[in-house]
Length: 483
Image (cartoon, rainbow, N blue to C red; front, side):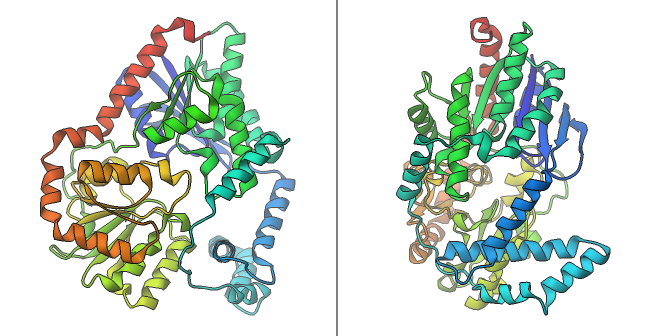
């Protein structure tokens, strides 16, 4: 079949989409991947044997002005009512500084002066608390209720998310011209685009199936404003019923999606497990990268860092974990990461907190191997509570025992499968106790994981690829489902 993958990003940075591409190409399908960028004019190329088309969709002048006003509103206020507001303001000032460093010529000089001193922006920056406070648990019930109230009203995603409407105009004709048999859309952002492509294909007399891959629990997103969450939820509810098959990343999330949308068929579960490759000669391990020799205990957190990920809990635990080191493996030195480094300095543990860059996704298990414990420090949110993260699977492929916060989906697996220890999310003393428990029992846990081939298979991409191949075979055979 001709399978078109659609992502609301540049595709290259999306490890899950890349794994699907490799799997479909290996199965003999003809594959193209379509994505968007908000910077520049886009480009074409090749990725893992598939055609790659990234379309540029720059915001309009009106949208850019509105964005600048939102940025000013985040920072220019008399006071910051809570830690979330202060975190947002710190982040905005940090982004202004990053922009100043990246600009050239007179714009760099002006922005640099504004960011460096003697300006209103510096005054504003000094008003913002520079150290993160201990995170409070968000009021999830109130957020969920507010999203539900907005969905029950007259909210319309097209009015709230004009950038996605522009994506339809830019991506639709390009995908139409490729004439796919299957449109497999990743995440909610491109769902309307995908439906339009399928509708036009069927109107032209071609069979075309729609697969929706829900990476997250849209109604439970905690890092976006409530109205934006409701707009994405509106987009999802208007289009999800059009999909021949829905896929998601964990069994609990499959249950929520089935319930919320009244689906006739439970979504398939394809874990965000790592695709592994033979270890290349000369690959530097994580221990070597950060210079922490064995047997010094090395905790690893791998993945994106924002305030809802709770990584500050691990930094705050280090004063009580003598001799233990923490490495944060991430690809962005954003304001939250900088705040973690400042916090480590305040606590006197800066020499035991390290940063390391990403490696290619298929090399992550080799990269992590040799560390001591894998950490998942997520704070509670409706989305996090049903998440089974890629880092969870990567730790198991690397043979690492796991310490996770008590987000239910992951905590249940750690307890059920004897993989490590669980602590209350955001609880520093609880994390200290869990790490000590795992360090004391490390050799047994590591041997338990290493000796269980079935466990490693269950949380590998090879097992997920079987499900994907069956899905596409079923779509090809089920002519009645592709009209």
